[in-house]
Length: 208
Image 1 (cartoon, one colour):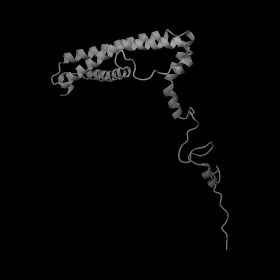
Image 2 (spheres, rainbow, N blue to C red):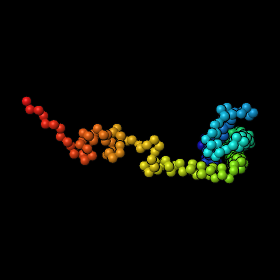
Image 3 (cartoon, rainbow, N blue to C red):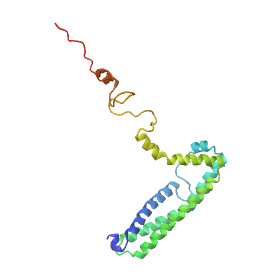
Image 4 (cartoon, rainbow, N blue to C red):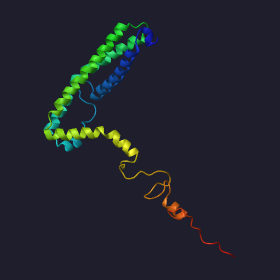
């Protein structure tokens, strides 16, 4: 049975699609965290790079890790509720004659949970930033701005406006070198008689 036959509009289906993505992300996060009380399943993350860049103290790193754990503990029940409600929504959509009112109610409840999670994440992010000094906040702002420039840097590199890491890009079997026409190797240039492209005849054949 098609969703529209059950009275489900296109708007609700678009919301449902977005909720599916959010739920998948939530489940992935829960799996990474492991069951409640058991902690993460993966090794402790390495914070050396950000610690060095911002000049974080050990106490700051410890405080940030505690805030992150508090954030995960706060949103975990909401993630579980979202998964349960999304499962109930899927069951309704799979059965014939789904009640549009029940479907709409679940959609709104899932959307409210998602908004609540976002609010909590914003609140904990603010707490994390408040552990930084003024100088560290300025460095963090620079780091965030450079991250946003990543797509422009990639596109500039593709248009040869920015030199790629590791030196000039090499194209074609001949591999371009400085001052050489595209695709011509030094050996090919020698055979053609140099950059001018004039053919240099070889020695005359021996006459017996």
